[in-house]
Image 1 (cartoon, helix red, strand yellow):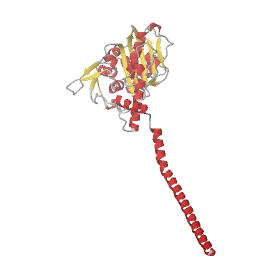
Image 2: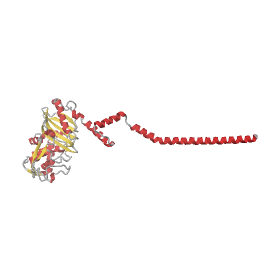
Image 3: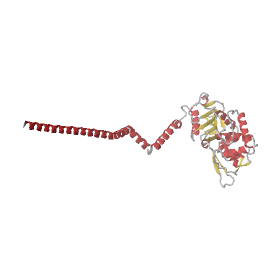
Image 4: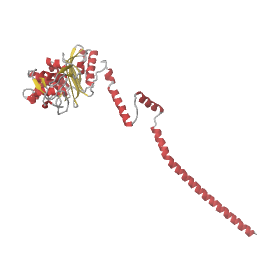
Length: 366
């Protein structure tokens, strides 16, 4: 009896041990699965957390976001593409930085000019009123035509002689256009007027080509004239200024402007606001205007004017003008913007008018 009870107890204990083992195994399996489940969830959540973290970094603050929305609304600006919007923003910044001082200048502050080289001289006294990079050699574009005019007038050729625009006068170097068609006959006087007033390249080319000895003799005479005027840093290679090898300095050009001012014909035709000319074969006249908009205005007293432009030279302007009762020679070279040379001339005028012109001396530099 006791033996049976002992055997029963042993079997019961064995069953209990088996059950306990199974429970432990089950618990281990459950724990393993739980851990695996936890790891899977963590691994799956990492991209989501990383994405949320990145978004948190990139997301602007509420105030910045509101400022951008107000900027877009106030400037009629839609940020459709990042590159496009970024480009527009930079354009606005550049425009804003380039204009505030110049637009508001009344002459009371220091004179700052957009032109890379500039010189203002009192023509009566020879005093340097303003100077900026005056000794740097640079291409001068159509300012060359002032020398063309002087050399042609020095030859005392008939001004009423008819000259014909030829294919040799066409600009094959820069490809500039002209309203003077090949075969058009004009007088030498008309060519002079169009070369100086409207900066017609074919007119200047025709003047050089019809010089005694041709264009080579004409260019040689231009360089001899420059040496006579003390323009030692200047060199000329054509009569129009289209070639960038026509070079000079602001100092030399002030001498050239002063010399050109001594020619009544140059003073007259370079300051005409416009001129209507009837070309051969046309029933109506063509109106040519002065390339210097200041001449076409009414609030300047200008005695001589010439503009110039090619890419290598930038925008150029030389003038003789009366400011505060004083005759001034103004040389502006290598200005980038289309209106910056005109703006510089106006700023020079305001500066001189605001100050005592007789007190501005060589110590004033830009």
